[in-house]
Image (tube, rainbow, N blue to C red; front, side, top):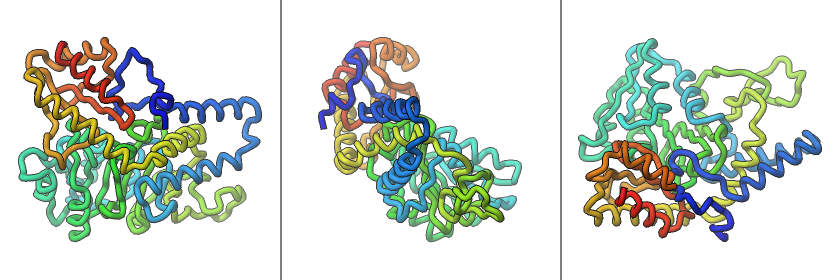
Length: 374
């Protein structure tokens, strides 16, 4: 793969914001243009071919997270929608609680806080005060804990958690385990079966290099049975192309969460991005992403003007590195960086850099020089 050709970014920018919204690779842009031209010239004449693309996307997502079956994969609008399916699909009892962390993105916080009127308590563990983030979560669990929900990687610090350890803990206690994997999928290896997750969700527009408006929602068959449906439409029925389907019943597969027509444009785009990622190999991509993060961490530690805010531990690294300038407040440094073409984010009390596998080391080094100079 010629990375420069596949990612022809404007040479005036250094793109270090894949933890927010990623640029599309050339193959994805091409897929969207072809789909638009096809619609322009022949409408839905080739709809059966579009359905094959949708089927391929489900298989690609199954492969990406190592789901047992495509029947466990639902195509959803975004992470928030999938989390809402879980939060408002479960039958809660007053006194139940949900355990999470105090570092979650709002998507994995507000939906659980909204259950307060049902008598459900949302408990937020402080990940920094225990011997490990996992122990901080476990400490919050009691006999009334119904579900533990956590981001695989924290958006504002880049901290990854030991999902397998948490999954085993939950299974031993009959607690549902929900993973927001948006900061992992496409950058790091993920195994839904190995970590014993009941629910996994992620948008496609970050490390998966896809468009906004299309994501994945994984659920095991047993966990799926625990969720009552909150949306209804033609697409979630068995034999959904039988429009005279009376009496109807919902499918037992994860497509039960897809109430209406699929996002075919998004499916063509995300499928193209995933083809690129899977062809390169997620294991290889993870190695490249961690290499870039490790370079950042090493250079920041050597710089007398910069302070690392992310964990420096080798086993606590992801694609996200957060730091601050010792003399320039992050509120002032961030607009300077953006004006000089360093596309990044202000998160976790500092500046967040999130390079992907294709980001040249030279560009990362240049971004650090710009950040140091201020």
